[in-house]
Structures are given as structure tokens and as C-alpha cells.
Length: 319
Image (cartoon, rainbow, N blue to C red; front, side):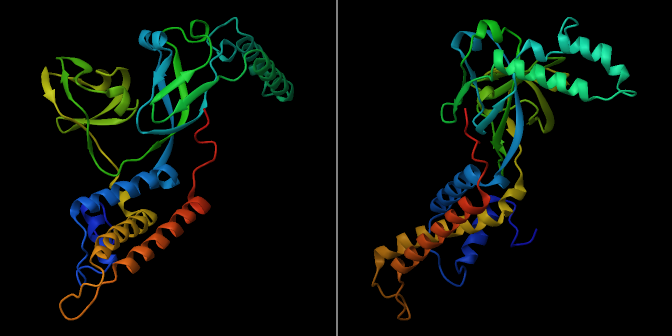
């Protein structure tokens, strides 16, 4: 891989330091400070830049625990929930006594010879009636709580086994993450049981998980300590370490590189200005205050650019 196209955290550090003058100039920043700057840059980038997120439809199966506490756990990777798909019997086509089912059953076969205008107008009218009498599902979400509160009658609208589908945005991870706790699998089973795990906070249905060096897809999350996967395992194993792969190409994002470099420059200037006026070997005097001030201007410009050009949709956090 090219030195100017990082694919790991270490390569990003090296590139940012080179942009500041290393190895010609010694950049007086500790490795821990470099990691702090990268984490700060990632956090800001993931919050606002469209290249750091992806739109997904999050599926959740209502459990007895959900009904008792009146909220649904949301994974930490979710930044915001835009919409909740309607939960209504009138939208179901599996019930043969449903009005829409009967219309499709009797009218769909004639669509090849007659206009679909009448059908379309009728469906729009039904949608209007549904909106008047059923309304739009009301929900509240605050991402630091990792909870989705649904403000309607759970007994009527959310019986056990109901699927809730949410339109939301999740942040993308650039590196492999090791999950909390350990997992155990039983012979001829596709269920992974966790010890000290938080599956409902760390994982999303349809994500891929690596166990014993093999990748498997998550088909269901039943609790914080139990998930279903596509793989059926042939032997009982305990104490498994589980990892989730990231997308290494994210390290090569142009904005992330520029913003991280500016943050490192700020730390470098802050470290150096404490020795203002001290003469270095060769008679050179380092102006730490100037480096610090330049970094602040660069950071301000980059953050204004983010808000002006790359910000996510304004309805992202609606709930």
C-alpha cells in the first residue's frame, strides 16, 4: 500500500507526522497524544461526515423483557433514527379478510387490460384514512442512552413476536473490534451464548462476526447474552473470542487525514509553547504559540467546511 494511502491506525499516524515535517523536524508529541487526536478526529468525523456512516434498516423482535421495561435496546453504533416503519394491521397482506388483500386478489389480474389509476387512487385514499385514524408511530431516541422509547399502547400495537423496523444511520468502524466477554457454542447448534457479553449493544442483525477464524452472519439477537448465526457448529466450544471486522479504507479518507493532522499540530504547539524562548541546538528557537494558533485556525476552517459541505441530513436525530 502507498505511504500516502493509510490502511491502519499506525500508517495514519506516520502520514500525519510527515505532513507536519517529520522526520526532518522532530514532532514533540507522545504516542498516547497521537491516539487521543485520532480518537477525537474519528468521533467528529463519524458524527457529521456522510462517508463515515451508512443507512440501514434495523430490525428488532419484541421480547417479554421489552414489554416490561417499555423500551427497545439500540446498539451503540447507531447515530440517529430517522423513521419507524408503520405498525398497523391495515398494511398487512397476509390476512385474507384485509381490504388491501381483497383488492389485490380481485383486481390485480385485470391490470394488464385496464388502467391502474382507480387502484392507485383507492390505495392513496386508504393510506389517508390510516394516517387519520392510526397516525404515525411516535418514538423518542437519545443516542447516549442507547434506548428507543415507543409512545403508544404496547399491549395493542406491540405483542410478543412483533418485528420493529427502524430506518437509521450507523457509524462505520475502520478497524477490527473485539467484543466484550466470551462466547460458547453447543454441538449442532447455531446459537452463541455469551458470558459477560452485551450483544444487544454491540451487534446489529445481519452483521458479520468472526469466531475461530471463520466468519458468520448474525440472524437474530435475543438478549445481551444470546445470538443466532447462520453457521451450525459441529462441536461444543467455550471461551471463544469474538471479533467484528472494520473497513480499513476509512483511514484513507481525505477529510479525516486533514482533520487528524490539524489536531496533532494543535497538541504539538501546545507542548512546544511551554518552552517558548528556549534556544535549541544550532541557535534555532521554536515558536510553539505560532504553531498552536495556526492549528486552531486550520481546525476552525475544517469544521466550518464540514458543516457547509459534508454534514448529514438535518432530520437524522428526529425521534
